[in-house]
Image (cartoon, rainbow, N blue to C red; front, side, top):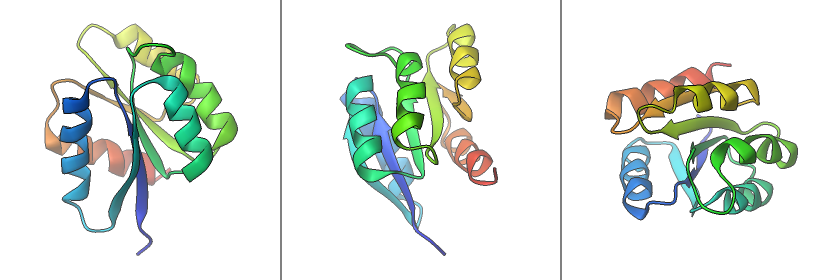
Length: 123
């Protein structure tokens, strides 16, 4: 089985740590890099061409919504999973219209994160 590569982008270090731990518990899943804003997400996508990127919506400098089309320009095969807080449903819909494939809502269950990963990998 091919290793599945990830980039995790969230302005909160503790959220990146939680997601990283969940991902790294699965054999064949590898986190290549972490970022704290949309600009870093675009740079990491261009450099690593990850299979999956988790992307927070609300971040400084460049938010997740604005970053989605730019990420897909530099890494068209990357599947983006938006990570949002409660009450950001309209922003999640905007991100999906721009090319994001799925979303998880904070605080999230480990099972939901794994389900989102499975959902985007079957496409």
